[in-house]
Length: 430
Ligand SMILES: C[S@@+](CC[C@H](N)C(=O)[O-])C[C@H]1O[C@@H](n2cnc3c(N)ncnc32)[C@H](O)[C@@H]1O
Ligand code: SF4
Image (cartoon, rainbow, N blue to C red; front, side, top):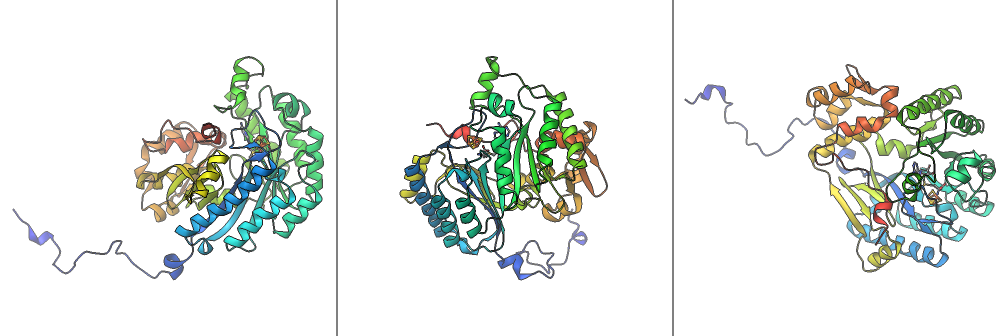
């Protein structure tokens, strides 16, 4: 009954695993963790109906108090992890509209970061609105003093009809053009646009693309417009007060038009949303999506993080956030620690946003043969025309790039299926 010939001789007492050890750099063991820092500034000098982000109307005193709380939050985190030891590779100051703050408030944000974190010569992105007045020479001087090198500008459209009648922005299309030309020679510029807007057709989109590419800026983002629950827009469309979006077929035609004009103007897409001149990509986007994805430490009310294998978000309401840190509590509102399968699938769910998954790299990181483990998922995506499966990688087709969420969702674990992305609008009510 016992076939001892099949067993090894008793010469091992198994107590270390993995045991396939070989030469290793000490940095792997003791090197600092690379993180992206995100700082949320949840204030704007006006609100937009389409916006799902955690943001409130600007109030001088509240902002001052908020910045004090932000510093307290950082000190609280520092009691748990030595943040001076983090290797900060990129910083995004987002919102809301950080450019709406006063010059001295902007100065204070950076002083807080410089006092508490160690970083030098890295990408620092500051977000703002292209409304013709939010940025001025004084703010530019402060941003330069703190080594900000990239500005991400909300433009949305350069067509007055969409800016005013559909999106009901607080500025005119001409103001956006003024802001771009004011900042263009001073910083690397990204502009955010939205397309597939209610009532928008391909010719309208084409005009926007031609106009923005003619500025020759380094980086342009095009987000397909989303009707997000808990924002006023879906209700207005339902009541017939705004036109409906044109449907997925038109969306795909728009996406193809976007690709073809952007290519002809010297930009290429490195995510479904982000277009850059070669070598002018935004590192923050690559760290967030490219696998193995880097941690993001989010600070401020409603900031989202992925840190120490956990997705979590901070308390959203500003007064509750301030109260929480004043009680010496790190202001985490909700989160989920990734289990082993979520860690594996996260590589693909997010990684496919950079359009291809290298199978060797995936195997090195997860120990998994992707073709065997995800055989059915890959077969299904090929059949749907979303990916091409090659020997060493799978890559998204143009159709797959346009509908990249379909690719990502195919790899969701059972527990994640059916969940949509959490957004500020879900949490900013009492
Ligand atoms: C923090 S927001 C806005 C930046 C700046 N406050 C502004 O309004 O110009 C970042 C970007 O998200 C995008 N965005 C906001 N709401 C959206 C929606 N409903 N659908 C798609 N993109 C959206 C916009 O392009 C926006 O510029
Ligand atoms: S789109 Fe920009 S300005 Fe408008 S509410 Fe959202 S963050 Fe504020």
